[in-house]
Length: 295
Image 1 (tube, rainbow, N blue to C red):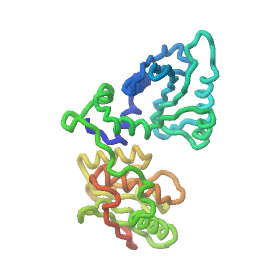
Image 2: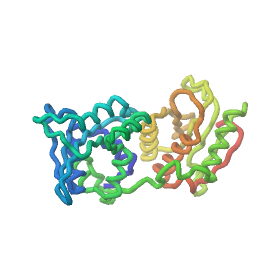
Image 3: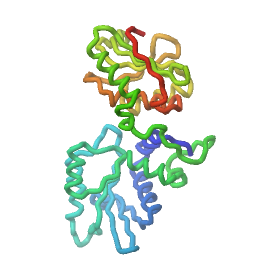
Image 4: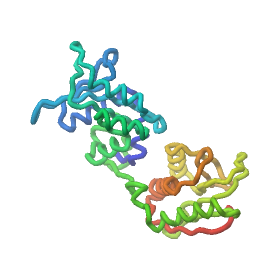
């Protein structure tokens, strides 16, 4: 199975809740635990119980949350899950060494801080996909995600590991300078990004009167079709961006919804996803040129 990490996470979010519970149990069994999926009518917040006897007896209570990307775990959820440590009811198998929360989403910053206070162990979506990729759990995951029979039967990781790895680099500074000029200049600005002497995308900051878009903002333009178009639609959906047609055949544009300050971290993230997914190139290998002008 040949699944990029971002696509893998999207497919995990599409599983039924009971399938996601079974998958987590299978992953813990791969790590050497004996697992039991609890009765849904009597789980009391516990989805999977994991036990291990060697080198000594251990037990974990696991709560699974198959959430969409934007549906983050909040402080009330953390407080609820952490209360499993305190429930010592004699008729329930809840006494545990570890209470863990496994989610396809992430936690708000206050929730993550509260989880640390309560010693609630967290496996978020990014960590979960890293576990699957690093341990090459292709066979395990294939029971839940339909494999692509034409691709190599193993996972491949994203080309770039993280946005933060580029902070201070040449291309990061190019994006940062572009954003600063775009926000302060009365002129429209554009950043042309090329890979192997071919234009991958053009980042335009200005007004687009099409679709009643009057405010100035960053808009990524690409000329793609076929499989590349499907990949661009996937990127826009996964990043919560708008996807619209351009003014020419095979021209498409994506941009963030709403208003707000332009963040170089976000601009690099979008560019990195485009270059990694559509063009198979690392963000740091692209050439960039800033200019004044419109599309």
